[in-house]
Image (tube, rainbow, N blue to C red; front, top):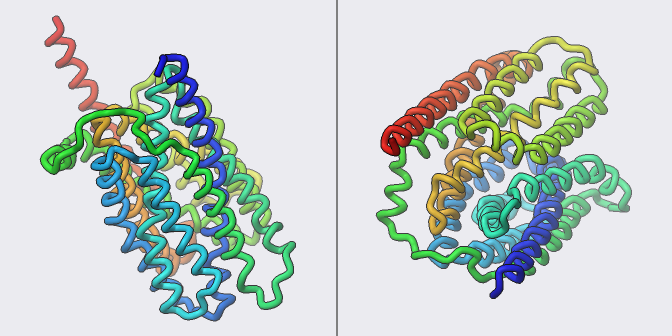
Length: 404
């Protein structure tokens, strides 16, 4: 294949990935806000819902890593992504008909075996695509996911309410299944051949990756940060507890995602001026400030304005993490590296954070004290990022001395 034709091919992959992220995050915006109300509508109690969600979380921790290892072994992350979306779609279709706690738990377990792999696998395909296209940026491909979430967050509730549903129990899973079907179709359009050729990974290389001190420090910092971000769903409870309108919740979340899109768009310029470790430290420091401000009794307008920090809390953090993995992990282990990040930082850190957030909300007397505590926890992530930055500077000095 000639160079112009190869670049045209990677450009088409990037365009399809933008559509993939856009459609997939519409499904995310339907699933997370509306799953629990749907499960309550079909008669499940709080403990039954918690058990079903726990089943999905347990399945997610090893699943992402196993999917990533499979993708690297096959050297076909796009093919693995297609299979993962098909399995997730099967679980989504089952939710349309599920009515018993056991059936729901089994389906969420099946979903947990597949859907948590979608983002690390799609990120792997995206990073491979932008590496093959000079000047391309992962962050500017990924921001289309944020745009999809904005569409979903603002429109899903109105869309679901506009449909006639006699028993009120099928609209949400139908909408979720249909949008995930669109995502699955788009995934099928991604080329299943390798964008980057290389040797197949061996177990000793995976062990060496897991023992990389720099990577361990990154995963530890991101796990603490993910636990901190798990308090974000309490924002609606905080708004309610302070007597504000639910519109404040919607405005705050929408404003935060808009800020996220802006940061993702600006990321290529930021990474040219600052190191990844420095940008991560900025993201974690801004998050600590955000939670500290939210813990105070702010007027509604200021509470919404503070959510602009979400651009740094999530947009900058995610772009930095994916960039670091793309630089520090060999290309033929890229899916495994993304899966390690998803399993340890996102799934495990998030699971711990969700549990502590719920416990703190009950024991500390509301969301405000939880956010104050979370701000202190986020300082640990900041400290780890500063250690990572110090290590990077030391490594740069050593390389400079060796060169001279």
